[in-house]
Length: 116
Image (cartoon, rainbow, N blue to C red):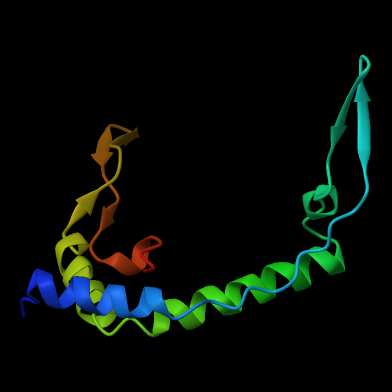
């Protein structure tokens, strides 16, 4: 199934007109002094990826992203086509053990991360 380029561009343009509502991002008043130069770092709190505030912020950002991506009508067709293209027989690096040579076969997309 081929989707005309103009249809895809029109759908993308329509989606781009809907403003996304991003969650508020806290800004702290952290300032470092590097040899006399003051450098603001208002988002330092995001560096700790295990902090509850950071996890909540990432979850909120992911929700916005997932909502946007799930609204793309062509996404399912694109995913199916890419899965078909990437789903071919693969072989790992040959290894030698006790005078026999073998390879590891990877026959479908489920053997590695293939998410769209």
